[in-house]
Image (cartoon, rainbow, N blue to C red; front, side, top):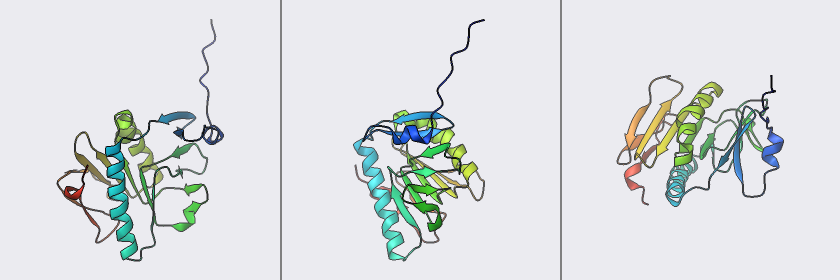
Length: 182
């Protein structure tokens, strides 16, 4: 009987060894390369980063916001290295020079054609397992935003790009997506 081909198992060292400018995520020994984001993706990222960052600054909040690329090590064993589009971390003890160790409080992923299954299924499951409190999936192609309140373990609430959405982790943060311009 012929031997089965062995799949290479990658580690965080392989992520750090990538050429400058190449981005990838690591999930259970597999590397997932990331395509460069589109202009529309970056417009959405900038819009959300500014809205959330301004809210944190105005309210003298304790949380910190980081846009991609920003390293998130979901679990202590470094087997899950992700770069969410936006990470909001309220526990400064999770932060070090490499990124965030543990679950951010709020993660936003902006769907790209190449990341659809990863954002909707794989990352949803990982973020839920890790203890992320709130997860938004922003889908430009569908002009939809799915908001998962992980603390309530309910079905997602679905919004459109014309809606104003209240962030669950903050009492008074609402983001008016109708103001998003491409």
